[in-house]
Image 1 (cartoon, rainbow, N blue to C red):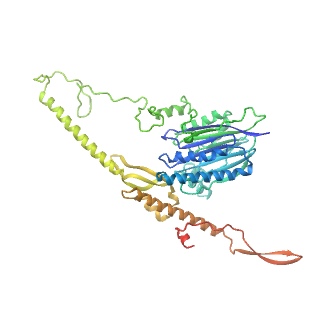
Image 2: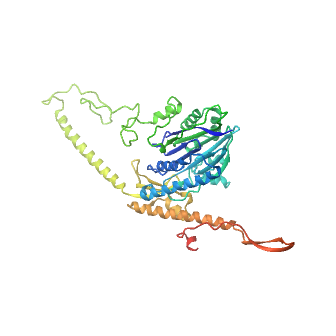
Image 3: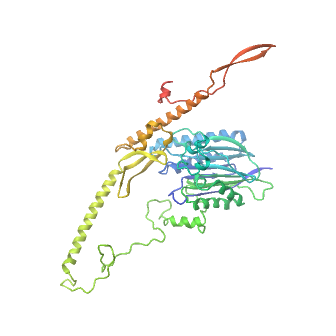
Length: 497
């Protein structure tokens, strides 16, 4: 009996996102999914880098070498992200989740960091085999939040650990044993956040065909609003000799990592989710991948030109063609007012241009301003000013960092929530973010050190009685305990030694 994989893989942008920051890979020995974050194309870059670093591991390998190989590949990806950030500071803070399963016979190596998930369907039971690295999951682990409340918590997507450019990755690495008939699902939170585990279970049980099952999962996520990119990798463990269908052999890449390669088919257009998706889409851009081009929403009516013989009342109601005028020398009734109309129109046009030009100049000025606030529970740099004019917001997120608001010291929370203004300089905003990142790092180091001290044996030595040559004697031994966790020198604990 020889175990192998038969797999299917799909990625969908969802109903609300403009682009796809997810990436995924499926091959005979390796399944990987990555959900990028960071915005301004940095998220899709990070997920693609992760896939690129792990894809070479899709080869036959001894079981005891899989976990070290995965750890090295993750470290390599983190180093590459760091180098890219040094070359282009605008990518600072980019990162990605990463979940990978690697096979060697019946042995499965699991590498996981972030909130993408891996599930195992075995003997009709579905179990999540990865643990989310999120704030909400940590609250559940501590007993401060129930799983039911966690499913609808507003900060359920606040990731505490990820593969990112600003810090070393700390993935969970475990080994499992596969069986014939196992079905594994890897998915981004675009699926798991909006589709319940019970529905996932029923869907995986209800479809024997992997392609149909993956399309059904994406359809379910889009039916639930499709608020995020949706990526699924589904694999069955089969016997190469007795299996009813042959194993898959060709590697497949989807999402941001696929670059210009052909994508798999999207949700069927005749499905309810497909019809909903079409209603939210614009017409195709003039060139593939080109942004900023004008597009028309299907079914929208273009503005009709106003006939020359129509006027508009003060209330905006359309009046019919003029008629029954007493003609003067110009051939129009009320000739003086008719001759004055082009002059009034010209003045109005000039005023509109001046107002629009002044408004545009003012808006351009606001776009040279930067400030620091929060976005989605993380510290972020905003471009513009923190004001609304006539319902129009004069700022937008310029760069979202990986610094969670929940991870900052209490002394920083008040200032961040109140919006920390950074003057007119992007460098000032980045300096504030750098200070917050330092405080965040120090707080984590302080927590790790406190936990280490709490569990450190006291006293450090203990005595035991041993028999030597028939005689009993007392020996002093030291407790086996790891060294103190490192603390950066710029932290108070580090300066204190």
